[in-house]
Length: 171
Image (tube, rainbow, N blue to C red):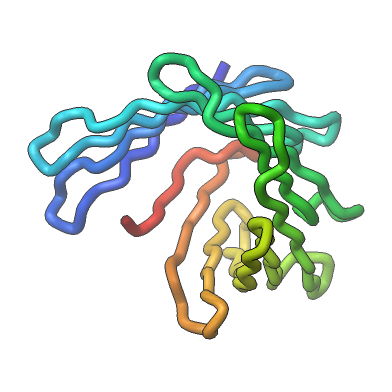
């Protein structure tokens, strides 16, 4: 199994979060440890991922440090293999949020997606723009809020096997 470590730091060089990924054929586990400014652990959570026959995440279950389930997300994909819907359930199995993605393609590549997140009576619409490098082993996702203002940029770098080998995200 591949292992991956992702470190996210404060701009002062202080470690904020460490994620360890462990991959298996049809599942993977992500253990996330967060730290305060003095380096003490503030939380430990675990995400358990299941994959469909195309290698896409079909389910993500989040657990606290005691092993109690916090939530479960189920994913659906369009014909090109990009997410079209995410369903979020609480520990009791009640649907608490639905996210619907409207995807825009140019030359077969996903370049933009509008996300309508529905939390019962509240709905939020955001937009992601995606930029690929020429080798397609790096993707920058630029997220904009409902007012059109940029919120953040997440960068994913993939290894030769198509697995994420590095991720950066501002904190």
